[in-house]
Image (cartoon, rainbow, N blue to C red; front, side, top):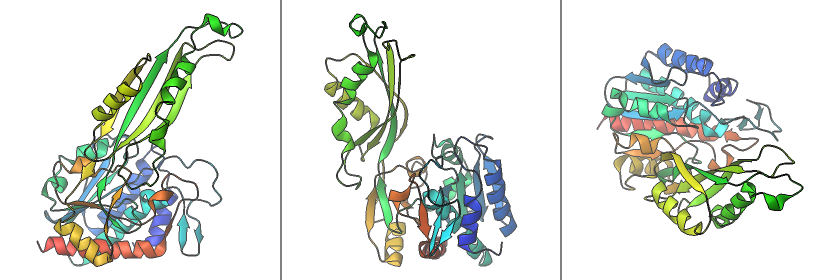
Length: 352
């Protein structure tokens, strides 16, 4: 693969990666790259959203990335893979195809020196993270002496992140003709009363990972414009600082919603994660980059891998504020530094 890391990123940006779409082309590209380097490659988990485990030897560090992205969305002024100056634009440029491209190029450098390492790639991180759960059972995770997740941190080193939970809130009412709303019971208005009591959770001043945040992300209700609705459902994205859990949030919401009728469900939770800020891997990354340890407000697969790997850090190219946003981009210089960091950490961990 005689490509630059920027060219590899552009390849990845031009391959469909929406989490709801077919993953085969993306998986084939990455598997082909890894096998061309001489790594052993296994596919595990759901065939529709497979996870990739690749390895050279049976020890050393593991690098983890996800190949899926959120939908492209609207309000873009750049094309997928468009380059302007030192920036590469496209959905996934920061979150996190650039990190994955850096891992592929780090693998290329490490194979030339026959360094032991692992590569882990998933294709459903933006949804349920089942790929990471499947990888827990592989020797790549069980034998790794450290793990680096390449999510966008602006090349700072993160050791602590929020958990993410999906909450579902339901209200019920009674239908009536819309010309006589007093004969019905409007479920949407009931929902409005509930949501007005959690508005402050969406107003964290700084995204530093220290406060609970709650975003109302999807809302549905009613059947027809001239019928008072008898049902309403709201989906809430809840981010919990370590060590808070979804059950703690549910209890807090019950107190706020006292006196109102509703149903609350929590169909999905990824707990908050924290590793030791003094771990050898973290110290090595901070010293190499000349930066400092930070907390991040998003959730990664670190919380899943932490049951098997104790020394984990999050560090990758791209600014976290660009994730899921229009005109997402990454700086080429950050990718070059990331490849250098990953190679450095792999060599260090291979030496014990």
